[in-house]
Image 1 (cartoon, rainbow, N blue to C red):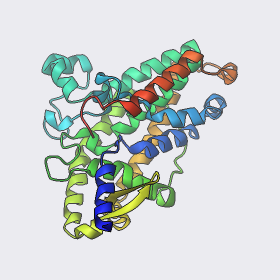
Image 2 (image 1 turned 180 degrees about the vertical axis):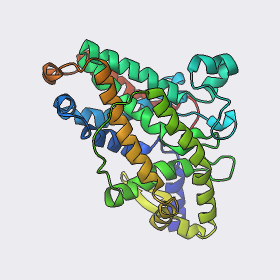
Image 3 (image 1 turned 60 degrees about the vertical axis):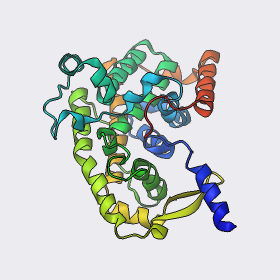
Image 4 (image 1 turned 90 degrees about the vertical axis):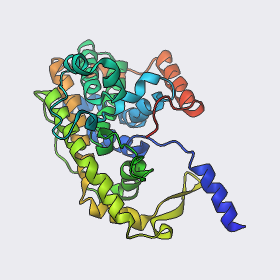
Length: 321
């Protein structure tokens, strides 16, 4: 009877939603990025750190409301050849001219969308628009973090071609949730001005594409060393008993990766803070002190509530991760 009960719980629990980097890691990245900012920005960002943390996951929630949202989170860069993917122009118009917009959208647009978000954030700073600054800061943080995930730069994004279904959430959710607070070092330094944002983010995307094969290969080899009852375990999460990768297997995987997840999180935190800082510099370093008393409008709050309701009640639009 116990085995049957556990099986039922498992079958129910495997339908739970999965997310890019996981809610935990996205929130952690935005939260820690705030502390890399200079005092002139901290005056606004620190009092609003809870918003920036909680709304780091809004783009994932929007995937349940907007069909066009999905491609903004990834780029299947291996579709365009092998590293360093010289066939793919880094300029969006050139890429569309060469491959067609349907192909570009089908394979993901995360590096280009990050640059669009940077433009929006810069405009928000210039206009001293509190709501737009906070919204765009929270959301650009999400996309930048996604660009640092190797499986977001691979057509085999969830191991579906190599019998490794679930590796996406394993790498970007299970590992950081288990180990980040206990083992990872997040002493990073300060944000830096990015002279060429396109070059910066494409370098990270190319790195992610190069590392994707290692993420898959290392897990495939490690799996041979663990029998099923050691690879998986039942653990409680959010008051639900779920079957997931065991702690021992997760720790072993992280060790085999030689600190990759920690390194990518550190890079993401630095990049998020640096893009915020770059937008502020490019906007002319506006004085943000007058915005510290601003709050979100009733319309803003209504939009946040509607997005949350759609996320909870709708099905994801586009591919699962």
